[in-house]
Image (cartoon, rainbow, N blue to C red; front, side, top):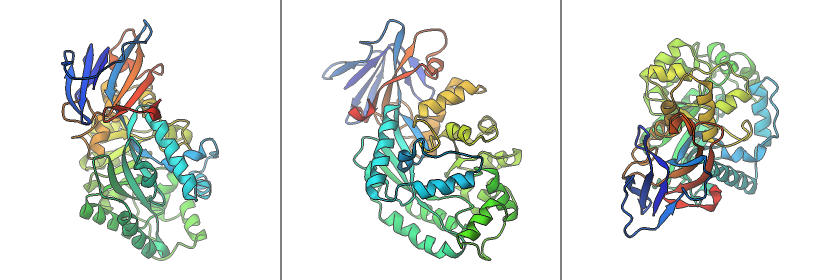
Length: 411
Protein backbone atom coordinates (compact mmCIF):
# COMPACT_ATOMS: atom_id res chain seq x y z
CA UNK A 1 0.00 0.00 0.00
CA UNK A 2 1.04 3.59 -0.68
CA UNK A 3 -0.50 6.33 1.41
CA UNK A 4 -0.34 9.89 0.09
CA UNK A 5 -1.01 13.18 1.85
CA UNK A 6 -0.22 16.87 1.51
CA UNK A 7 2.64 16.32 3.95
CA UNK A 8 4.39 13.65 5.97
CA UNK A 9 6.49 14.19 9.10
CA UNK A 10 9.50 11.99 8.47
CA UNK A 11 12.29 10.74 10.71
CA UNK A 12 13.14 11.48 14.33
CA UNK A 13 13.30 15.20 13.54
CA UNK A 14 9.81 15.21 11.94
CA UNK A 15 11.04 16.63 8.64
CA UNK A 16 8.18 18.12 6.61
CA UNK A 17 7.97 16.49 3.18
CA UNK A 18 5.30 18.04 0.96
CA UNK A 19 3.63 16.38 -0.81
CA UNK A 20 4.48 13.14 0.90
CA UNK A 21 3.88 9.44 0.59
CA UNK A 22 4.60 6.32 2.63
CA UNK A 23 4.87 2.81 1.18
CA UNK A 24 4.11 -0.05 3.59
CA UNK A 25 4.81 -3.70 2.82
CA UNK A 26 4.21 -6.59 5.23
CA UNK A 27 3.42 -4.10 7.97
CA UNK A 28 6.70 -2.14 7.66
CA UNK A 29 7.66 1.15 6.03
CA UNK A 30 9.84 0.43 2.98
CA UNK A 31 9.84 3.82 1.26
CA UNK A 32 8.83 7.41 1.98
CA UNK A 33 9.24 10.81 0.37
CA UNK A 34 7.71 12.92 -2.37
CA UNK A 35 8.54 10.62 -5.28
CA UNK A 36 7.60 7.18 -4.02
CA UNK A 37 7.31 4.67 -6.85
CA UNK A 38 3.74 3.60 -7.62
CA UNK A 39 4.48 0.38 -9.48
CA UNK A 40 2.72 -2.71 -8.22
CA UNK A 41 1.01 -0.96 -5.33
CA UNK A 42 -2.45 0.11 -4.32
CA UNK A 43 -2.62 3.85 -3.60
CA UNK A 44 -4.73 5.64 -1.02
CA UNK A 45 -4.65 9.41 -1.47
CA UNK A 46 -5.89 11.24 1.60
CA UNK A 47 -5.71 14.61 -0.16
CA UNK A 48 -9.02 13.85 -1.80
CA UNK A 49 -12.20 14.96 -0.07
CA UNK A 50 -10.79 17.59 2.28
CA UNK A 51 -11.80 21.25 2.26
CA UNK A 52 -9.92 23.99 0.39
CA UNK A 53 -8.63 25.43 3.67
CA UNK A 54 -7.40 22.05 4.95
CA UNK A 55 -4.30 19.88 4.57
CA UNK A 56 -3.72 16.20 5.30
CA UNK A 57 -0.65 15.08 7.22
CA UNK A 58 0.65 11.56 7.85
CA UNK A 59 2.33 11.28 11.25
CA UNK A 60 3.75 8.40 13.28
CA UNK A 61 1.20 6.61 15.42
CA UNK A 62 1.02 8.15 18.88
CA UNK A 63 2.12 6.31 22.03
CA UNK A 64 0.39 6.35 25.41
CA UNK A 65 3.00 5.58 28.08
CA UNK A 66 0.63 5.41 31.06
CA UNK A 67 -2.97 4.23 30.98
CA UNK A 68 -5.43 2.08 32.90
CA UNK A 69 -7.83 0.93 30.20
CA UNK A 70 -9.75 -1.31 32.61
CA UNK A 71 -11.11 1.86 34.26
CA UNK A 72 -12.80 3.08 31.08
CA UNK A 73 -16.23 2.22 32.49
CA UNK A 74 -15.71 4.79 35.27
CA UNK A 75 -15.91 7.79 32.97
CA UNK A 76 -17.72 10.58 34.79
CA UNK A 77 -18.56 8.38 37.79
CA UNK A 78 -16.02 9.62 40.36
CA UNK A 79 -15.72 13.04 41.94
CA UNK A 80 -12.55 14.49 43.39
CA UNK A 81 -12.94 16.39 46.67
CA UNK A 82 -9.35 17.32 47.45
CA UNK A 83 -7.99 13.99 48.69
CA UNK A 84 -6.26 11.58 46.31
CA UNK A 85 -6.20 8.99 49.09
CA UNK A 86 -9.99 9.06 49.41
CA UNK A 87 -10.47 9.17 45.63
CA UNK A 88 -8.29 6.08 45.13
CA UNK A 89 -10.28 4.26 47.80
CA UNK A 90 -13.49 4.91 45.91
CA UNK A 91 -11.83 3.90 42.63
CA UNK A 92 -10.70 0.55 44.05
CA UNK A 93 -14.20 -0.11 45.33
CA UNK A 94 -15.78 0.63 41.95
CA UNK A 95 -13.34 -0.75 39.41
CA UNK A 96 -14.62 -3.82 37.49
CA UNK A 97 -14.51 -7.11 39.38
CA UNK A 98 -16.12 -9.42 36.80
CA UNK A 99 -14.05 -10.32 33.77
CA UNK A 100 -16.88 -9.46 31.38
CA UNK A 101 -16.97 -5.89 32.71
CA UNK A 102 -13.20 -5.56 32.65
CA UNK A 103 -12.98 -6.86 29.10
CA UNK A 104 -15.65 -4.43 27.93
CA UNK A 105 -13.86 -1.50 29.60
CA UNK A 106 -10.47 -2.42 28.11
CA UNK A 107 -11.90 -2.77 24.63
CA UNK A 108 -13.71 0.54 24.99
CA UNK A 109 -10.49 2.23 26.04
CA UNK A 110 -8.50 0.69 23.18
CA UNK A 111 -11.09 1.80 20.63
CA UNK A 112 -11.02 5.35 22.00
CA UNK A 113 -7.22 5.37 21.84
CA UNK A 114 -7.21 4.22 18.22
CA UNK A 115 -9.82 6.79 17.28
CA UNK A 116 -7.51 9.52 18.56
CA UNK A 117 -4.41 8.44 16.65
CA UNK A 118 -2.79 6.22 19.28
CA UNK A 119 -1.29 2.97 18.00
CA UNK A 120 0.62 1.84 21.13
CA UNK A 121 -0.58 1.70 24.74
CA UNK A 122 1.33 0.97 27.94
CA UNK A 123 -1.55 -0.42 29.97
CA UNK A 124 -1.58 -1.30 33.68
CA UNK A 125 -3.96 -3.96 34.96
CA UNK A 126 -4.68 -4.51 38.65
CA UNK A 127 -5.32 -8.23 38.23
CA UNK A 128 -2.92 -8.65 35.29
CA UNK A 129 -5.63 -9.87 32.93
CA UNK A 130 -6.25 -6.90 30.61
CA UNK A 131 -3.88 -8.34 28.02
CA UNK A 132 -6.53 -10.99 27.31
CA UNK A 133 -8.85 -8.28 26.00
CA UNK A 134 -6.11 -6.55 24.02
CA UNK A 135 -4.45 -9.48 22.27
CA UNK A 136 -6.71 -9.60 19.21
CA UNK A 137 -7.05 -5.83 18.79
CA UNK A 138 -5.12 -3.88 16.11
CA UNK A 139 -3.02 -1.94 18.59
CA UNK A 140 0.51 -2.43 19.95
CA UNK A 141 0.43 -3.10 23.68
CA UNK A 142 2.82 -3.17 26.59
CA UNK A 143 0.81 -4.86 29.34
CA UNK A 144 1.91 -4.30 32.93
CA UNK A 145 0.72 -6.66 35.66
CA UNK A 146 0.24 -4.52 38.76
CA UNK A 147 1.30 -5.71 42.19
CA UNK A 148 0.54 -4.26 45.63
CA UNK A 149 1.46 -5.45 49.08
CA UNK A 150 3.30 -4.15 52.09
CA UNK A 151 3.66 -5.02 55.73
CA UNK A 152 1.77 -8.23 56.50
CA UNK A 153 0.91 -8.78 52.84
CA UNK A 154 4.47 -8.62 51.53
CA UNK A 155 4.82 -12.40 51.33
CA UNK A 156 1.53 -12.79 49.50
CA UNK A 157 2.51 -10.04 47.06
CA UNK A 158 5.80 -11.74 46.27
CA UNK A 159 3.98 -14.98 45.49
CA UNK A 160 1.47 -13.21 43.23
CA UNK A 161 4.17 -11.29 41.38
CA UNK A 162 5.67 -14.21 39.47
CA UNK A 163 2.29 -15.91 39.11
CA UNK A 164 0.87 -12.92 37.22
CA UNK A 165 3.87 -12.75 34.91
CA UNK A 166 3.85 -16.52 34.30
CA UNK A 167 0.22 -16.30 33.20
CA UNK A 168 1.05 -13.90 30.36
CA UNK A 169 2.17 -15.08 26.91
CA UNK A 170 5.64 -14.50 25.54
CA UNK A 171 6.48 -11.22 23.83
CA UNK A 172 5.93 -10.90 20.11
CA UNK A 173 5.99 -8.00 17.65
CA UNK A 174 2.73 -6.49 18.94
CA UNK A 175 2.68 -7.57 22.59
CA UNK A 176 5.18 -6.93 25.37
CA UNK A 177 4.76 -7.78 29.02
CA UNK A 178 5.81 -5.84 32.07
CA UNK A 179 5.47 -5.54 35.81
CA UNK A 180 4.15 -2.61 37.83
CA UNK A 181 4.74 -2.36 41.58
CA UNK A 182 1.98 0.14 42.30
CA UNK A 183 3.43 2.92 44.48
CA UNK A 184 5.74 3.40 47.49
CA UNK A 185 2.78 3.81 49.87
CA UNK A 186 1.07 0.58 48.80
CA UNK A 187 3.97 -1.70 47.92
CA UNK A 188 6.84 -2.71 50.16
CA UNK A 189 10.53 -2.27 49.49
CA UNK A 190 11.07 -6.02 49.23
CA UNK A 191 8.37 -6.30 46.57
CA UNK A 192 9.91 -3.47 44.54
CA UNK A 193 13.33 -5.11 44.62
CA UNK A 194 11.87 -8.46 43.56
CA UNK A 195 10.02 -6.73 40.69
CA UNK A 196 13.23 -5.05 39.54
CA UNK A 197 15.08 -8.37 39.74
CA UNK A 198 12.31 -10.15 37.82
CA UNK A 199 12.33 -7.43 35.14
CA UNK A 200 16.07 -7.91 34.64
CA UNK A 201 15.80 -11.69 34.66
CA UNK A 202 13.02 -11.89 32.08
CA UNK A 203 13.62 -8.66 30.18
CA UNK A 204 10.32 -7.15 31.28
CA UNK A 205 9.31 -3.52 31.10
CA UNK A 206 8.69 -1.90 34.48
CA UNK A 207 6.58 1.06 35.54
CA UNK A 208 5.40 2.52 38.83
CA UNK A 209 3.56 5.52 40.23
CA UNK A 210 5.88 7.98 41.94
CA UNK A 211 5.71 11.38 43.65
CA UNK A 212 2.04 11.61 42.80
CA UNK A 213 0.78 13.71 45.72
CA UNK A 214 1.88 15.34 49.00
CA UNK A 215 0.52 12.45 51.11
CA UNK A 216 3.05 10.13 49.46
CA UNK A 217 5.87 12.55 50.29
CA UNK A 218 4.77 12.72 53.92
CA UNK A 219 4.52 8.94 54.14
CA UNK A 220 8.05 8.38 52.82
CA UNK A 221 9.62 11.12 54.91
CA UNK A 222 7.92 10.47 58.24
CA UNK A 223 5.89 7.27 57.96
CA UNK A 224 2.80 9.27 58.88
CA UNK A 225 -0.12 11.01 57.24
CA UNK A 226 -3.19 9.65 55.45
CA UNK A 227 -1.45 6.62 53.98
CA UNK A 228 -0.36 5.35 57.38
CA UNK A 229 -3.97 5.59 58.54
CA UNK A 230 -5.12 3.61 55.50
CA UNK A 231 -2.55 0.86 56.00
CA UNK A 232 -3.47 0.55 59.68
CA UNK A 233 -7.17 0.46 58.87
CA UNK A 234 -6.53 -2.35 56.38
CA UNK A 235 -4.41 -4.26 58.86
CA UNK A 236 -1.26 -3.91 56.74
CA UNK A 237 0.89 -1.92 59.13
CA UNK A 238 3.63 -3.71 61.00
CA UNK A 239 7.22 -3.09 62.09
CA UNK A 240 8.55 -3.76 58.58
CA UNK A 241 6.93 -0.53 57.33
CA UNK A 242 9.47 2.14 58.16
CA UNK A 243 9.82 5.75 57.01
CA UNK A 244 12.50 6.35 54.39
CA UNK A 245 13.28 9.91 55.42
CA UNK A 246 13.67 11.40 51.95
CA UNK A 247 11.76 12.35 48.82
CA UNK A 248 10.06 9.85 46.48
CA UNK A 249 12.78 10.36 43.85
CA UNK A 250 15.49 9.78 46.45
CA UNK A 251 13.60 6.66 47.49
CA UNK A 252 13.48 5.55 43.82
CA UNK A 253 17.23 5.93 43.58
CA UNK A 254 17.72 3.92 46.78
CA UNK A 255 15.56 1.03 45.60
CA UNK A 256 17.19 0.93 42.16
CA UNK A 257 14.43 2.34 39.96
CA UNK A 258 16.72 4.99 38.48
CA UNK A 259 19.26 2.39 37.42
CA UNK A 260 16.89 0.78 34.91
CA UNK A 261 14.77 2.13 32.02
CA UNK A 262 11.63 2.24 34.17
CA UNK A 263 8.70 4.53 33.48
CA UNK A 264 7.86 6.68 36.51
CA UNK A 265 4.25 7.82 36.25
CA UNK A 266 3.26 11.36 37.25
CA UNK A 267 6.28 12.59 39.29
CA UNK A 268 4.24 15.67 40.16
CA UNK A 269 6.23 16.86 43.16
CA UNK A 270 9.99 17.30 42.80
CA UNK A 271 12.71 19.80 43.70
CA UNK A 272 15.98 20.67 41.96
CA UNK A 273 17.82 17.82 43.67
CA UNK A 274 15.19 15.33 42.49
CA UNK A 275 15.49 16.54 38.89
CA UNK A 276 19.26 16.20 39.09
CA UNK A 277 18.88 12.59 40.24
CA UNK A 278 16.38 11.83 37.47
CA UNK A 279 18.71 13.32 34.85
CA UNK A 280 21.56 11.07 36.01
CA UNK A 281 19.40 7.95 35.86
CA UNK A 282 17.91 5.79 33.10
CA UNK A 283 14.23 6.13 33.98
CA UNK A 284 11.65 8.11 32.00
CA UNK A 285 8.87 10.27 33.44
CA UNK A 286 5.29 9.89 32.19
CA UNK A 287 3.50 13.21 32.62
CA UNK A 288 -0.31 13.04 32.47
CA UNK A 289 -1.57 16.61 31.84
CA UNK A 290 -5.33 15.94 32.07
CA UNK A 291 -5.01 13.93 35.28
CA UNK A 292 -2.65 16.55 36.69
CA UNK A 293 -5.31 19.20 36.10
CA UNK A 294 -8.14 17.01 37.42
CA UNK A 295 -6.39 16.56 40.78
CA UNK A 296 -5.41 20.25 41.03
CA UNK A 297 -1.72 19.53 41.46
CA UNK A 298 0.84 22.33 41.52
CA UNK A 299 2.63 23.14 38.26
CA UNK A 300 4.49 20.15 36.86
CA UNK A 301 8.20 20.65 36.23
CA UNK A 302 8.37 18.73 32.96
CA UNK A 303 10.06 21.66 31.21
CA UNK A 304 12.86 21.69 33.80
CA UNK A 305 13.14 17.91 33.52
CA UNK A 306 13.51 18.03 29.74
CA UNK A 307 16.05 20.85 29.99
CA UNK A 308 18.06 18.70 32.41
CA UNK A 309 18.01 15.74 30.01
CA UNK A 310 15.20 13.62 31.51
CA UNK A 311 13.19 11.63 28.97
CA UNK A 312 9.65 12.94 29.55
CA UNK A 313 6.72 11.26 27.81
CA UNK A 314 2.93 11.48 28.01
CA UNK A 315 0.11 9.40 29.41
CA UNK A 316 -3.68 9.58 29.56
CA UNK A 317 -4.02 7.80 32.92
CA UNK A 318 -7.70 6.74 32.65
CA UNK A 319 -11.21 7.89 31.83
CA UNK A 320 -11.84 7.99 35.58
CA UNK A 321 -9.87 11.27 35.69
CA UNK A 322 -9.62 12.29 32.05
CA UNK A 323 -12.49 13.12 29.68
CA UNK A 324 -10.81 11.43 26.71
CA UNK A 325 -8.09 8.90 25.92
CA UNK A 326 -6.14 11.10 23.52
CA UNK A 327 -2.39 11.54 23.54
CA UNK A 328 -2.95 14.15 20.84
CA UNK A 329 -5.01 16.15 23.35
CA UNK A 330 -2.21 15.80 25.92
CA UNK A 331 0.33 17.04 23.36
CA UNK A 332 -1.93 19.95 22.49
CA UNK A 333 -2.29 20.88 26.17
CA UNK A 334 1.48 20.88 26.66
CA UNK A 335 2.03 22.97 23.53
CA UNK A 336 -0.65 25.49 24.49
CA UNK A 337 0.92 25.82 27.94
CA UNK A 338 4.06 27.14 26.25
CA UNK A 339 7.72 26.86 27.05
CA UNK A 340 8.56 24.04 24.64
CA UNK A 341 9.00 24.05 20.85
CA UNK A 342 6.56 22.01 18.79
CA UNK A 343 9.26 19.47 17.91
CA UNK A 344 9.91 18.69 21.59
CA UNK A 345 6.20 18.36 22.35
CA UNK A 346 5.63 16.06 19.38
CA UNK A 347 8.52 13.89 20.54
CA UNK A 348 6.85 13.39 23.94
CA UNK A 349 4.07 11.44 22.24
CA UNK A 350 6.22 9.62 19.67
CA UNK A 351 10.03 9.24 19.64
CA UNK A 352 10.61 9.86 23.36
CA UNK A 353 7.72 7.54 24.19
CA UNK A 354 9.12 4.77 21.97
CA UNK A 355 12.48 5.14 23.76
CA UNK A 356 10.79 4.89 27.17
CA UNK A 357 9.23 1.57 26.14
CA UNK A 358 12.42 0.23 24.56
CA UNK A 359 10.75 0.23 21.14
CA UNK A 360 12.60 3.08 19.44
CA UNK A 361 13.94 0.76 16.72
CA UNK A 362 10.47 -0.27 15.59
CA UNK A 363 8.01 2.59 16.26
CA UNK A 364 7.87 6.29 17.11
CA UNK A 365 8.79 7.85 13.76
CA UNK A 366 8.23 7.45 10.04
CA UNK A 367 11.41 5.75 8.88
CA UNK A 368 12.34 2.90 6.55
CA UNK A 369 12.26 -0.41 8.40
CA UNK A 370 9.93 0.73 11.15
CA UNK A 371 6.42 -0.58 11.68
CA UNK A 372 3.68 1.06 9.62
CA UNK A 373 1.86 2.51 12.65
CA UNK A 374 0.50 5.78 11.27
CA UNK A 375 -2.16 8.40 11.79
CA UNK A 376 -3.66 10.82 9.31
CA UNK A 377 -4.36 14.32 10.62
CA UNK A 378 -6.47 16.97 8.94
CA UNK A 379 -5.10 20.41 9.77
CA UNK A 380 -5.96 23.93 8.73
CA UNK A 381 -3.90 25.82 6.21
CA UNK A 382 -2.28 28.92 7.60
CA UNK A 383 0.87 30.44 9.04
CA UNK A 384 3.29 28.42 11.11
CA UNK A 385 4.92 25.06 10.57
CA UNK A 386 2.98 21.86 10.00
CA UNK A 387 4.19 20.65 13.41
CA UNK A 388 2.80 23.74 15.13
CA UNK A 389 -0.49 23.49 13.26
CA UNK A 390 -0.75 19.78 14.10
CA UNK A 391 -0.74 20.70 17.79
CA UNK A 392 -3.73 23.03 17.55
CA UNK A 393 -7.14 22.05 19.00
CA UNK A 394 -8.70 22.24 15.52
CA UNK A 395 -6.87 19.12 14.32
CA UNK A 396 -8.98 16.14 13.29
CA UNK A 397 -7.78 12.53 13.28
CA UNK A 398 -9.04 11.17 9.97
CA UNK A 399 -7.67 7.66 10.35
CA UNK A 400 -5.36 5.47 12.41
CA UNK A 401 -3.38 2.67 10.76
CA UNK A 402 -1.80 -0.26 12.57
CA UNK A 403 1.02 -1.89 10.60
CA UNK A 404 -0.26 -0.18 7.48
CA UNK A 405 -3.82 -1.44 7.80
CA UNK A 406 -6.64 1.08 8.28
CA UNK A 407 -9.13 -0.33 10.75
CA UNK A 408 -12.75 0.40 11.52
CA UNK A 409 -12.09 0.75 15.25
CA UNK A 410 -10.17 3.97 14.57
CA UNK A 411 -13.12 5.74 12.96
